[in-house]
Length: 204
Ligand code: SF4
Ligand code: SF4
Image 1: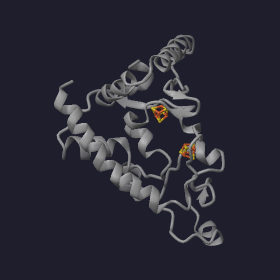
Image 2: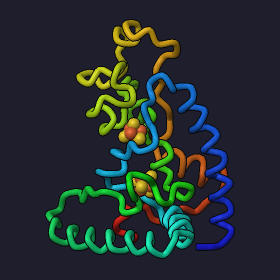
Image 3: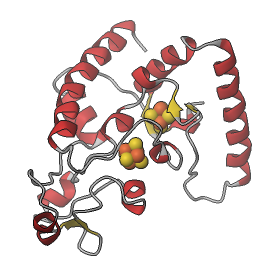
Image 4: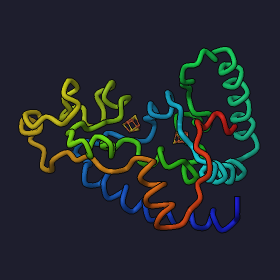
């Protein structure tokens, strides 16, 4: 991976974070994210590109030796579990960078970790004219983000719940899929080569 790709990636992160932060701010009435809530880092696959992994490694190298050791031990355990669970299904696990309910590589975290928590739509659904909106599953299951305004059966926001809740701003879904951010914005506009994408555990 070329050095200038990391530089471009840092620039990319700055640009997308401005946008993501303003969406979180806009939707603050529905957002329950707070320090110590780490449900979203406890059960996932965490898709990660080669470039994102290179950046994560920089974060890992900046950690204290004892924290690095804890992470390495977690990874070793996960690798053993992955072998035992190799039944063709997705391997779902707690991210090894989660230490005491906090992300140990926060500034270096992946794109998916930055957008997670907001509602989003997929381009395929939008192109079909569908009003299906996706919300983070772990938040919904635990009465967190958007749970007061989401209709689980219809997979979209409920106008009735919105009115009943006396919210000021309408809930919104955003075009924040990894595909869009990497392919359309990162690759086509900023000329970034993200490389292969696979679950985080397969890079470790
Ligand atoms: S996205 Fe959901 S689970 Fe993750 S910190 Fe926010 S509220 Fe908690
Ligand atoms: S990198 Fe950090 S934010 Fe992302 S899943 Fe792991 S612990 Fe959570």
